[in-house]
Length: 115
Length: 113
Image 1 (cartoon, rainbow over the protein chains, first blue to last red):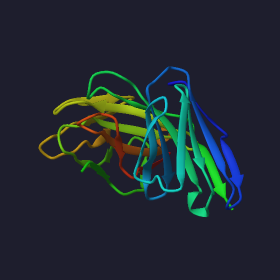
Image 2: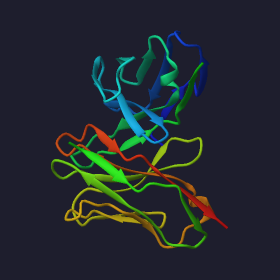
Image 3: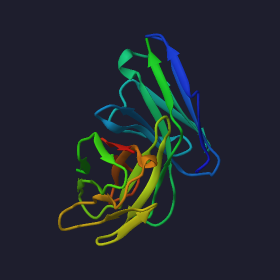
């Protein structure tokens, strides 16, 4: 358990509304990640952060933005939700250490349904 | 680029059967390799890992050996239990920076009594 929580755990929203998901960690890890999980696609990286105010895009970043104003919190925002963004969203952290010895640990996930 | 390919599921086995889930990878360099397990309604949990060629990762009766010559990291367990029913993901970390991770599509395992 890497002390990662996500909120909300479940959300139903309507098309066109903004949605923000929160990831909170308690162990001061520098790297944080947002993934989405969809059947047949496994996990796909949306955005990641390598420090406060430092973020970068992943392979499926369109329609998503992120912010990290504190080390412990990483927010994912859907500016205008669409049905294609219905998914399960996972936050993760990466442990620090020598190259090759990093590990990722995941939060419990947020199930988002866009109607 | 970096990618992971794992066998399609779902896989259904009887209790005490032998399990193999195949995983091969493509990477520019020598990545670390991982197996994660996801139980229903939960996040992914790190099951085992290997950081260099010929390393064997093991945990809870599961094993996987890092094979550089075949670029593979197959997951095995000698005798599965009903409690092993889950989705298993193979993954690698970017060999240059270690900052990004690449996941396979997952293999669903159901073990029947």
